[in-house]
Image (cartoon, protein in one colour):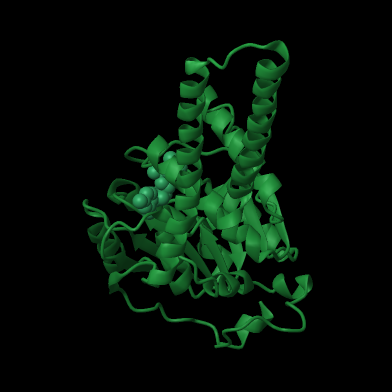
Length: 341
Ligand code: UDP
Ligand code: MG
C-alpha cells in the first residue's frame, strides 16, 4: 500500500473512469442511533454499485445513546461498516479527523450521520471525481435563507474577516460535506495542529476542487448539536488558526487611540494658553480612563485567545483517543488497483 501521493502526476482523468476499488464514507456521529439505523442500509443501497467495495466508517464521538450498539448490529447484519469509538465527546472536527485517519478508500466521502446530506449529491460528487477533480464540496444553496438575520450577519462578518485575513480561499456556504481523493486525505493526515477548523484545513491543502450545490434534507432523527456558543467557539478557532487580522486590528486601534490622545492634548494646551479656559473636565478624564481600560481589556482578550491556541499546541496532546476500532474490511481487489482507479 502506497502511503504517499504520486510525486510526478496524479492518475489522469481517463484512468479514473475505470472505477473505484474502495469507496469510504466517513460519518461522525454524536447520539445518532436513530438516524444511523436508517442511514447505513440506505448508504449501502445507494453507493454499493459505485465501487468494487464500500466501507462506511462511523466515528462514535462519545455518544450517550445506542449509537455503538446500532453500528455493531449493522456489522452483524453484514453491512460493510467500521466503528471507531472515541473515548469521549471530542467534537465533530476531531471525529472527522479520526475518520479520515482510518478511512482506507481511494475516494473518501465525509457526510453527517443525521441524513441531512442527500445521497444523490454524493453520486454527483463521484461523477465529478471521475472527471479528474480531487475535491468536490457541497455548497448549501438555501443556507442564508434558512438562518436568522443575526446569524446571517455574523456569518457574513466571519467570512469577510477570513477573506481579508488569509490567502487561503475558504468557500462560503460549504461545509464538511465533501468528497476527497486519497491524495487529499493523505495530505490532511500530515497536518498536526490541534486547532481543527476542518473547512479551513480542506481549503489549505489545495488540490483541484469544485463545488456542487445541494439542499439539505431534514434530520432523520433528533436535533442539531450546534448552538450559538459552539458556533462562536468554532469561529474563534477558525480566526486564530487562519488569520492574524484581529491582532492587526488591535495594533491599528492602538495607533488610532494614540493619535486621538495627542490631538486632544494639543487642544487642551491651546484651550488653556490661547483661549484662557482653566483646566476642568472631570467627566472627560473619567470617561477616557474607562474607555481606555475597556480597549486594553479587549486587546488583552484577543492576544489571550492566540496565546491559548499556542498553549494548546505546545501541550502536544493527541487530537482524540479511541476506545474501540473494529478490524478493517477485506479489500476485494488487488492492491495494484489503487494506483489505477
Ligand atoms: N457531531 C459530532 N460531534 C459533536 C457534534 C456533532 O460528531 O460533538 C456530528 C453529528 O452527529 C452529525 C454532524 O456532526 O453527524 C453534524 O451535526 P449536527 O447535525 O448537530 O449539525 P448541523 O447539521 O446542525 O450543522
Ligand atoms: Mg445536521
